[in-house]
Length: 106
Image (cartoon, rainbow, N blue to C red; front, side):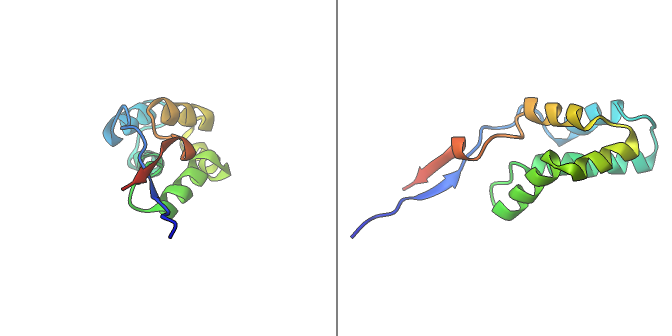
């Protein structure tokens, strides 16, 4: 009988948390109001969801949002540069590639 090892995704721990992401992004918006902070919160939560360990679908959708065209629309609303947001997400450790961090489970 062939044993197929189950594999799980175990990325490295991110360098900063959600609150730091929000602070950095809020500093770069063109306005400071409750609405812009809400938009930044949505973007920041999507970035953090890129490392979701429990829900593969959530992780995949978050990565598609952060790396896709939808992020550009949300960034436009508050004057953020989407490439800047992606660089911040990457440097903070939230855009780890899945194949590089697959681990076998015993």
